[in-house]
Length: 289
Ligand SMILES: [Zn+2]
Image (cartoon, rainbow, N blue to C red; front, side, top):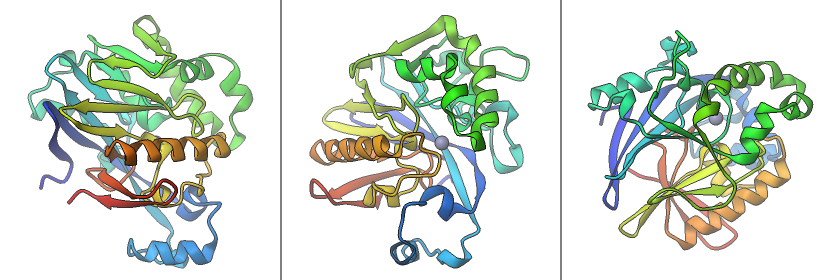
């Protein structure tokens, strides 16, 4: 299997997962699982061949998703773009699309799950032009308003503030004329619906892609690591409202279980796809082989 591109179908829709590189996150247990009991975490991480006391770095993948519904060509999240670290594969989304015969101008709809740099920074080229010049840009309304008003400055914790703000301030203003803001859980284009999943950020959006009785939820950073599926109460250190995020996780996981939806995780091991099993309150994760 090609290690950074993966084609699959959802009913009649053609999908292409493209890995836009990765980032080596330091002190991963503190970042991903600050609320986990060390004993419990130690046991669970063994399933991923990780020894907790030696876990110094997590290579977090950045998985973007292209969907051709037949009627619309859609991209979910845009990776790090030209400002990314190419030695880690960041910024190769455009090259990956080109290799599959997809030109930037072909993309009609860009869905941004939330305005963190790894999801947003691929929208503006080094020369300041739009990377996807023919697209409309879809955000959940609260997300757009959080980052384009004084709220982000006031409410972001100090630790990550500078980085997060500089990306949003560079990327968002040029999109303003072509933005479409979602306020309800309704279709973005036929077959792709916006689901509200606030908590990681104030307006994180899950894109639900459905065709022919099959469904995939692009969960983005609602769930950053597969263990978050099994322990939704293990919020991450970068969730702006942990309690709200836990509630969103439970709601979306229940929905995925009932509707038999696959999950596509932006930071899950490539290609990021897997299935949820279990009952209404305890979930298990099984990656697609
Ligand atoms: Zn992310």
